[in-house]
Image 1 (cartoon, one colour):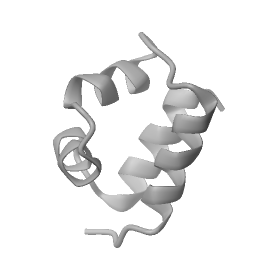
Image 2 (cartoon, helix red, strand yellow; image 1 turned 45 degrees about the vertical axis):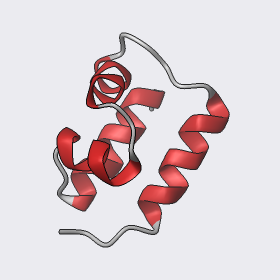
Image 3 (cartoon, one colour; image 1 turned 30 degrees about the vertical axis):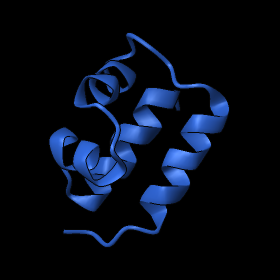
Length: 60
């Protein structure tokens, strides 16, 4: 699974939109769009931190 897909899968599992994830994590929405769309890849350490933070979130 690619980096952007892991973030997308985790976001969808939580039932969040890109905007909601942006607001919760204080990451620009455009950055999330780029990661999920494959236009940019987050550094491995950033991806790990984002996914860990998402694991601790409550689903909507």
